[in-house]
Length: 201
Figure: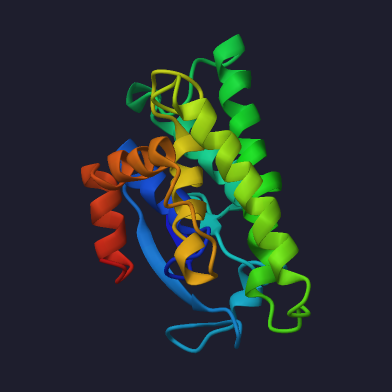
């Protein structure tokens, strides 16, 4: 498989998941501004949406959208237990957290990365994110991971998005449970390896 990424972007989540799952893959770095690959070829030929991540499967099929890639990867390596069993309530609870990260956190950061976002709007965005982080901190006071005692792809995705906070002036220093959660995930071998491979550590 080939995973198309931009270092540090949301594509880091399926990258970590592939390492956690023990699946063979090749990293392909994308210049999103120019929509080109390292060899100069057109990334839009791989993903016409022009976004990462994109995963080219062994048969040549292409999957996009990070939340979907996380589920696909988890299902390719059930022994890694990155998601509970299909059809179980626990699985739907874990997927609810994947969706929360995608819609409430990931998209919540988007205005802070856009150069044309009005400066007077950014404090409101940071305030909204801070309220979501406070909610997570309260939840993690009672739970080791988002969906309970077990680490899942929801935690991988959340870890990646939390990593953006310091780059855009969002502070969660007082949220001790959230900080401990982030540190716990950062210490996993697969996470450390992915960060090194993307030049982030």
